Amino acid sequence: MQVATPLSDALGRYLDLTSEQMKLTASNMANVDTPGFKTQGFDFEQEFARQLQSGADAVDLAQAQEVDGLVARPDGNNVSMDREGMQLAKSQLQFRMGVELLKHEFSSVMSAIHAEAK
Image (cartoon, rainbow, N blue to C red; front, top):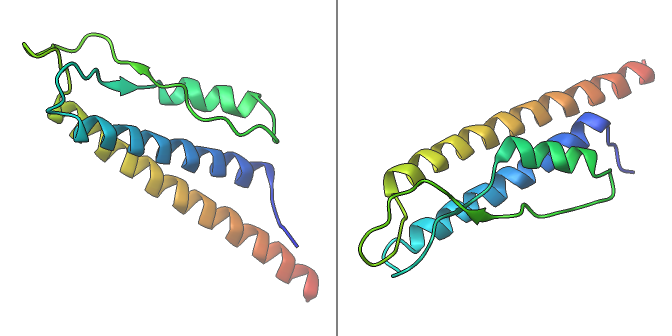
């Protein structure tokens, strides 16, 4: 039996998107010394809103794009380890928050199930 609520589904998408952001950040960091590499990213809030509106059955990956406004080195690479470190920290905090909210949601569901048994 699968127990899901609209909130738990939304939080699942939130965690998936946060995980995608961390993977993208790790890729940017891994390519810091690759000549010509351009930093990839996406607008988290806009992407999350898009995924929530796409329906319960749709599972989309975020559409990564080149990040504008970064200074390129002479070799054409524009990865900033400072930016990526901040992005990784932000994503980790978002993920932890999503996990805590999901735990709370499941705790509420379990309380409702146990209340029915009494």
